[in-house]
Length: 155
Image 1 (cartoon, rainbow, N blue to C red):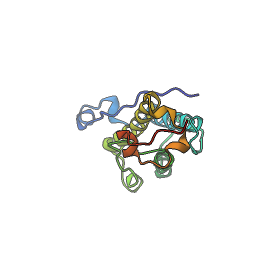
Image 2: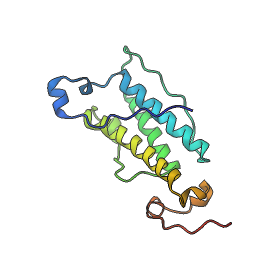
Image 3: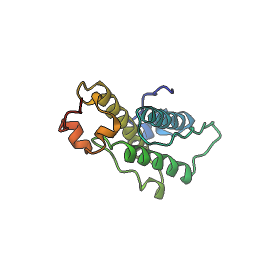
Image 4: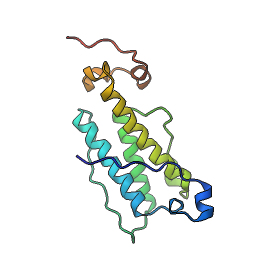
């Protein structure tokens, strides 16, 4: 199984003004995003969620992301949240493909990925919820699960 790579979610206008490495979208950012998408889909698949595992694209320094590439990333995030749950603070990113990317868009992508990972981690460490299978939790909304408003599983 892949390893999670810590997301970068604090890019700012100051980074752009100062020309810091965080000001530019580069192959390292894209590979981290692709890897984290693969990590989440693999992890959810192992937990019994119906999610397609797609091999991440391996970006090089000479690659230039196209609208279709960013759209594919956004679609994969949407597929994960549809198969699992959207975390608290989920940021809608469906319109990213229709505009020029900026640092806030990349922050949003990485915040969503990080939020999904945190939600999975909390589910697996929650002493009550981890007794459920995916099928046992399917009937509940994310809000009900987050609040613990679920019925005890049958023995």
